Image 1 (tube, rainbow, N blue to C red):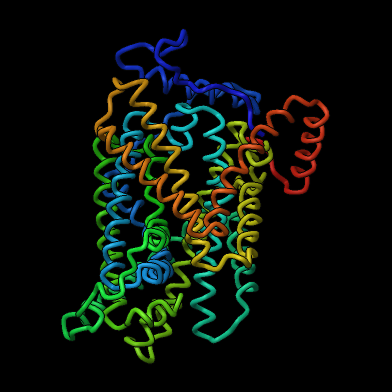
Image 2 (cartoon, one colour):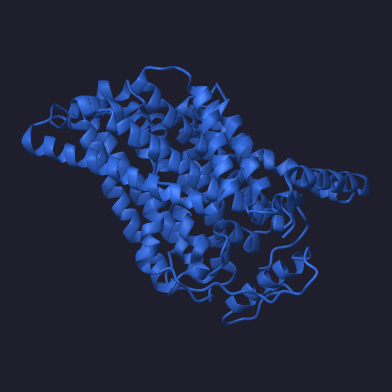
Length: 503
């Protein structure tokens, strides 16, 4: 449940304002002190632990590239091209999505160098904007972004495998995947990371094979798709925004490095460098992959298939076409496994902060994995898998809306930080006009997207706004002894059923 607390950063002129000059140390100290005061479940006093700084620039680049370049590139191109209507328009959109994500990532990097805290945007929003915006960030991250992304990746895996074998039991495959990944992450983090490493290699192998074959086709032949690349481009504002959303969400994942800033070597230098280099590499890979698709497929063929890499393989690899759907399925399964590694830890952190029910901060008594939070992610993922009114492209669009809402919260935090505490030292400074322009752009995209498709995109906005009454309801419930006693009994019951212990 959400607890009442106030933002740690006060407005200028407040009696509790932070000292002039270099207030960053005071801000971080206050934040960490609150974390220590909340950690009351142990019976011994634990000194504050500082992370070892071992993540180099190369490590950070690898983490971001690995987190961003996922299964989205095997499914999102259909949504981008279907809405924009042309080869040239699609490639321009992929470049624009990449560049816009670089700008947003640099804004995150400024926050990361000004407030070097683990926890990423949730921590920034919590100490700058206060409890309600922080809860909304955590709410959409844990209960919408993670599960819906898992549903997209799971559907991608099922789509490619079933398309190859011409089967139609997608729901059964998805439920089996969710159960398998859940059990794997509850049983062993070590085996989960090993599986992720293997499947990450499959993802890179698939992209290398597609790009290599595409470059060969472009060099040796003259693909018809590139002769008049902008023919059929739909310049309607609704179509442009609808094309932007799946491309935009395909670049999601670059914010993962901000959660590791306390473990990064020289974050003031390496954080902005890592996001710039890695996002430029991902943009190049995505554009080359789409060029490879178009080297053998017309726009009509492109938009007719959600499994675009499968269609590409059928035209290029002949009898060996089965390789691509298998490695794409492995890549998607690896991405789902990555979600089950990361997002339960967000729920765990939120429960430790008092934003979520206490049981989600418990761990398995034998394996020390956050099993209640893993089960929560599994349940939410099954919900999105079962959402029959959303096809895979609809889920991508809804994810784009939710991701935009999360970025809006974080950019608002950055503007508030710039206004209240302009003297906090940071290596990178994004001009306020750029941040304001980004906010206006995202708000415009959000409004147009909801008007263009109120069912799908409105669902994303509705899920975000649903967090507001839940937050205030939890504050009211916290004041009721009867409800608190009932929650204690539920927590004890779940603790006994799941064999978990507090941390």
